[in-house]
Image (tube, rainbow, N blue to C red; front, side, top):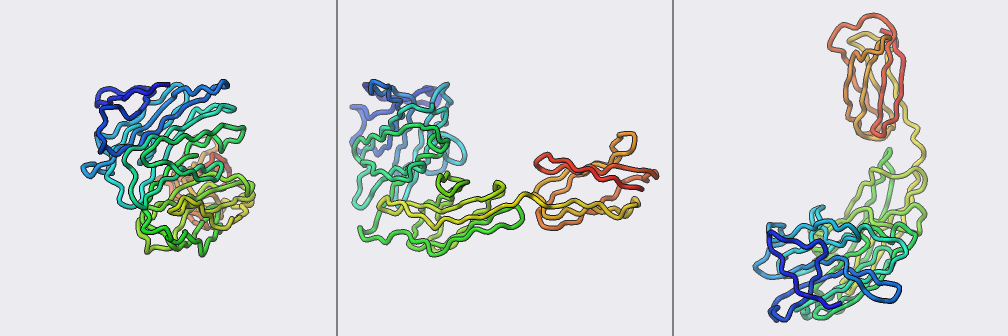
Length: 361
């Protein structure tokens, strides 16, 4: 397919842009283009989507009106994630250390073969390298810095093959070829109530390096749960809190790419989360309007909705309680006199589970 240069203005964005280096492009322009294709059974590539990144000392890494948000296509989509938003065009400051492009893809079709075309211009610099990280295959592929590179992939029956954050591109400047690789000297995962805290220490890290916290249910197939960027290389220890672990075994590992593109991983950590065995207690019983307490023990942290309902089904009191885990006691004081009788105390947890306790006033 013949590529044509695309001119983007503030008032027009194509639904399926194709980016290329036109004959009119300046030889000094520094650009990174990525185009997504689907490859037919006959081996013919069909353009689906694309992105453009331009670099200059006059540009800022802060998002502004010169960066173009992506419009969603009816089919497959390919874009770049910045600040939880998806862009197709971004202007960035000249690369001084390490720069990363986090791609997002969606609406990918199972059983289809795809191709990403990378077109770079004037990114080549002594000691600089670029690698495409495939989080599904756990591989890294070198990308030319003043060339065109193609990467083929397919979507299988595994959900991770179509993960939105499957691909990222890391561009880095190495001080020397003998730069030491990242080394994990400590990693640990431990459960506190229903939260799993993952912590790790690493050496030979640099500003701009990216740690990927990866999660698995079987210890074999991992997906990215979160990413942490190194802002201060002097800080060697990092942490991540998984607030939504599943019941049973949860596996974690930390991954990062060395300056030469080699993927490094921490050891795999396993934490078991037993089925929730917490409890809700209302006391004393019988109670009085100025003496009623709610005790929450070892439940899922979050917002709990409390209602006191009389024998006629009328809501006598309604209150929200923010529970942070562990054991917490909340004093409940109705704003009015409570007529004698039998009442129901209804407690609704953050996941919608309901518990009802009868109490006498």
